[in-house]
Image (cartoon, rainbow, N blue to C red; front, side, top):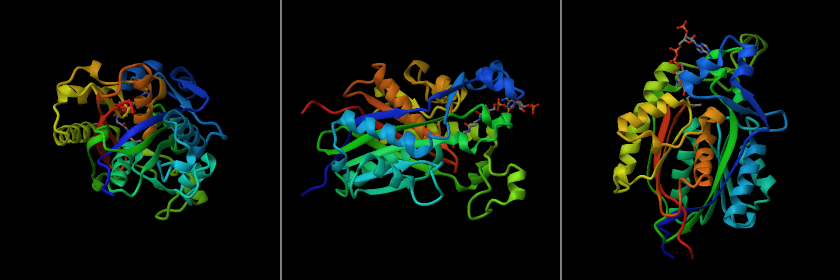
Length: 334
Ligand code: ACO
């Protein structure tokens, strides 16, 4: 049997925690203001996970919705990828818990860690598995409880992030839908531009290190800003060229939702109007790997994408990682 040429997106789902934390609520706890957060980032609120809303819980909810929407039974899934940098446990993979929760028997299941670029990386890897013939039906979930890494006393980071999950079902097809071209990149020299130093094998947590609050994320925001714009623009231009289309043919750009000013800088550099970019970071903040699929979900829900449209996904994250995907949305009626 010859390998399928495409992997169409058949279903999509999302989940966010119940609790909403507004900028004003944060301003009551730390030295910040709604005005500062809004003008520097565009964020007005974020969803923050409670103790019963850990990564696999959100991932399971998003994955279940995607399967239902696709009309795909859990038994039909042969591969499950969970893109996350905030796993339930250090070991084993969070994908194992999601697999159990969804009742997916015996599929290959693994985690993929590419921080905020996780969904774009996952879509590239997942499509590759389908194109090679190794997978027929694949569930890709991107989920992060990034607030678990946040020091709520650090105003440089705590205002930026929220929690959530997004998922898609990919299925082998001969029709030209799904991922048409993608590229992923990383710059290892930037490993500590944004990181959590303590709690892994390099620096295991000790009471003294925890006392110093070293288990939380730190970042060099301004430097990341510059690399983010460059990484997203260069990979977007390459993906569009590799897909054999022009930027004009792209109906909608769904970028990683970290900061409105980063998205505006990308729009300017790509010479595209802001009305071609989907933005929902005002309500969710930066949800790490979940950000792109949550935005994609809402874009579809709002009628900004219909079957046959070309959509450009572009993201960057810790690592530093980045990547872009050109996707033909939907699938023609059978
Ligand atoms: N409230 C009030 N003041 C603040 C706050 C806050 N929440 N946070 C920082 N400040 C202060 C700083 O202390 C600084 O004060 P100083 O000049 O007295 O030292 C001042 O505001 C300006 O700080 P800058 O760093 O210059 O602010 P900037 O305009 O660069 O915006 C920001 C900061 C929003 C972090 C921006 O640089 C950014 O978005 N960078 C990208 C970060 C990012 O997206 N990271 C996620 C990567 S994706 C992933 O993998 C999860």
